[in-house]
Image (cartoon, rainbow, N blue to C red):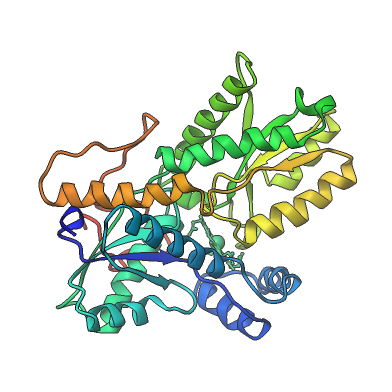
Length: 359
Ligand SMILES: CC1=C(CCC(=O)O)c2cc3nc(cc4[nH]c(cc5[nH]c(cc1n2)c(C)c5CCC(=O)O)c(CCC(=O)O)c4C)C(CCC(=O)O)=C3C
Ligand SMILES: [Fe+2]
């Protein structure tokens, strides 16, 4: 597998989620340990999972993506094995690292199922990698690098551009022309967004997708708005706003004709998408009599699967000291291979060891 040297494995690293009712509470305990989430919020989020039989969609989505990555690698003659580990549920990252070391893996490249920079989407994964390498006792035998943030890669933006157009086309032709384009991502505390490019990166993706929509429908310009879902934390702590449901109420009051929601914050239909958008926001829109369509996430779109291969080859070439072409559609990307010292900090837990960064 010369194209992927010096790497001898790819590790898909994700969030993890429960796969049965009895797993919901222990999963939430893993996620929120030491994070000061109010008990009411925790109970409410538990209910979101119970509404879906206690099963998060995320693990099945990771399995499906890995199956497609393996097929894509084989079709392109890449023989590198693909492993899977999660931060918050089985298969736990530390267990996977232990198995990789036992299999003889020496240097792995990590693909995280989060496209943007922020504490939650980047450094927290790198801190968990540091902790898991320690826990697995593989620090001396197995090293890991992390693939850069890929928010503006054509393999991520392209599927959203297509699905946004498809969502407009789902709407009644009567309202399609006047439908408003609304991008949705996961809210984070302002203390995270102020210390990362989280918002400008989303704005860059939103503009690219809006440009594609405008071009497809032959419009001079397609206005858009970025809104947020899944706020948690105590009410006293400021988070990114507006919330998607509040925004829908505001737009309906102003006489909006229809909305197209594009969940650019999510690589697949996570709980936030199937609950906060398809259940909660859809309910609010129905009450308001506001027609709503929701664009698909990349999931296992061929372009997104190919993105993983492209980023693996990009990073492998870079590590071999070869010149590389880096795909990136915005002025904000491509991001550096190795995170800058002190990037994406969590002001509440400073100084935790993290891998894959200059610090
Ligand atoms: C930016 C971001 C992403 C995107 C980047 C990425 O993909 O990693 C993300 C992903 C996800 N978040 C997820 C689930 C949860 N996140 C929580 C809590 C929090 N998320 C935060 C941010 C983010 N989260 C933050 C700032 C908190 C507060 C606590 C803290 O400061 O860390 C809680 C606790 C309860 C609650 O308060 O909601 C849960 C259950 C799932 C699984 C979904 C599924 O099952 O399909 C996924 C993919
Ligand atoms: Fe989250």
